[in-house]
Length: 497
Image 1 (cartoon, helix red, strand yellow):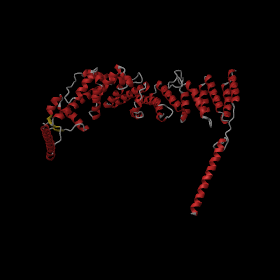
Image 2: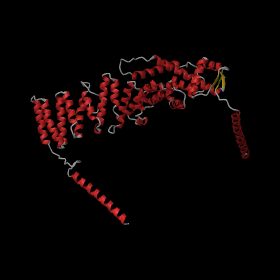
Image 3: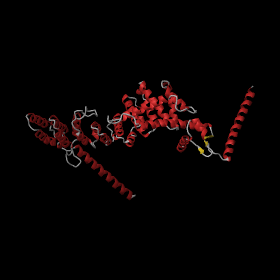
Image 4: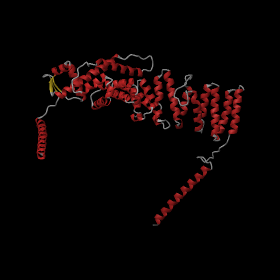
């Protein structure tokens, strides 16, 4: 018991000491004590600042040198900074920059800006005020990302960007300046440099930017990385934007949604991913502002149907195909070629190739590929025409998808068939048919065995006697169940009579 009392007394004494120390620190902080035990003196230098600012203006107006005026203000800036007179410090710093700007001395302006912002214990309010003052000198306006057309060089933009680096209170300004510098590089023809500059900013971590500004910045990153032909990084950047962010139906977010899926279409056409291309165009088609323009929704819907036809058969492809056919049937009435394509692919019937509307389908293909090619072009030096090899590959892919559809239809109706007869039904030579069947079997979309000596193609696996008996037993059980239910219903009807 004495040991417990002794330990409790020590603990209470320790708490008492901590309370006294905390109370002492609180008193010192209210009396103006700094973290190092030194008192922060707050001196009001507003009167002297007003006098010295007028003196500097008089010195410049009288033909004096800019260096003398800046030296006068530099000494005053130090006194304001050390004296913690922040309002006066802001006036002195901004006046120094303004004098350099009025004298049109850019090297002196950049040097003064870098010197003032890197002073020891410089106030964040002063740094922010200087950056805000300099923004209109390089941008169209404070809230813009567009550099001035009269900007002679990017040195001031680079200097401001370096100043804002690592400062949380200047995140928005850093994003603006980065966009402006990337635009300058792009106008100079340095697409790779512009893309690298934008990649340095991880705008998704900036808390001071709105969702709209972040999406806009990321879209610009995607555009430049695609222009740089860096498709892997473009895909990584695109993952920073979630589709649910486009649920906002404001006009700006709808524009960003259309731009995002247009950029994704450029990526997917390079990857030759027809299913995701169909998804991209369907997302564009379902945008409210696109629905208001008949030409735009028709273009998007035609491209969506086309790339659905070019996509490999899968549950997802079939689901989207049924969704488009059922939900958008009214709009499909205005597009007979697209509607006919969906009807043919949804019916379990053999499709004759070429299609009756083959010309319209190929025209839609050419228009879609040309539009994506034009959007991807950055400079006029790039070729305006489509690579004929790519066009031929897409047309060949359409033929292959029709063949694959026909093979799946035949596999539903035949357990086995002669290869010569199947080739005749599909209008192919046997070697091309065998190649396509092999591709389908390798992808796992079809079960098939080919007996070359006998020229027999089997679409069902061979069953052991035990499995055949089991299936028969199952069928007999179902038959007896139906007979029993039928007998019960007949007896029930007789009893009611």
